[in-house]
Image (cartoon, rainbow, N blue to C red; front, top):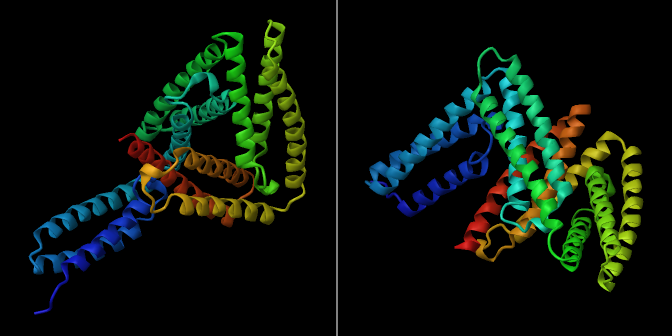
Length: 359
């Protein structure tokens, strides 16, 4: 009788299931390849036969549970992909909405309101407004209700209302306290924009940078500078605030020059070069993740560092998607799919790191 190594068989089962976690868990079904699950089911059937022969009851139970999961998921994927084009478009919009919800959780939920980035929140409100309009249009064209469209539309409307109320609360919080305290809040806001520049522009290829991000940073610093000056007019005579005014003025000049250079670089670049720059920037993000997070103890990882990687990939995905709407390119479409897959994985890892550090 052939000897069956149960430990080796268990390791094979874990390896197969790791493919599920990597390619399917938390990912949108409309973009998944069900044939990968078919292969996983076949491999699981083979291992089940060996586990039953070896009378390994615990392993048999695990494999049977995994097999049911793979079969159900393959059926759900094929059903989702067979939906009408309008419903498939609803799924895509739902995925973009989910990324916006993730950005809110990372940057706003449970954070000090006075120091939050109003420009970022405004960008998210506008994005949900765009998604809401598109979903409402789809709902109006459908002959029958579609769960993904209706449920996402409700969630988007509820979230947008929350974000609008949060924006008002942030403005109120920033205006509370003494003049000195308000000056401290404004300094923190300005430092947040400086950190954005360092993370997303300094030393990076101008070709892959998102101009709208720099525009947002400039608008935020303009508003911050106005408030710093207003505090002086209200009677604040603090050397720190005067010094901060000078710093912000200097950074604004530098950022406006950089924005002009980013625009100039992009305007003079052919499509293949732009696609390549986006791909190279995405690979840099993947490398940063592998070096800083893959295989590491979650309790020791910095969630803010991962949040920065997520933001960088979101910016790239946004640009890739915008480019695809103007001119289709197979390489760009492939790269966009990869970036979105990795971004969703990293967003999930961010939540697990936060949970691990809190335990």
